Length: 137
Figure (tube, rainbow, N blue to C red):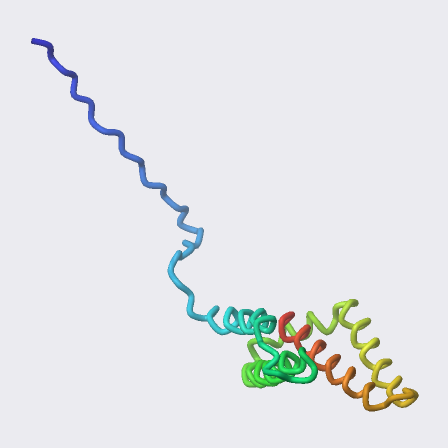
């Protein structure tokens, strides 16, 4: 009869973190639910149907404007948490150029041939600028 050599199974050694290092938790962070939900709601704009409207994208613009309003209220309610992000976004050169374009577009309505169409386009630009800043913050 042969003797079988019994070998103990290999075990992985546990890694020891340095005492000065912080451990990263893999647990769920509930503080990220609202930003994730807001992002998902913005991405859901494309799935809004036209509801038989004359302008097929009208309900989508209305949804985006309402969502912008709600997100702005949320940011204003927690402005201390978002103070650093707001100042960072407003000091960005792209944001300054975008706000300059936004102001010039508003002034151009005064010289528009069809001012009603100008206001419709500007209202959509307001919703777009609001979405840009909301998602950036």
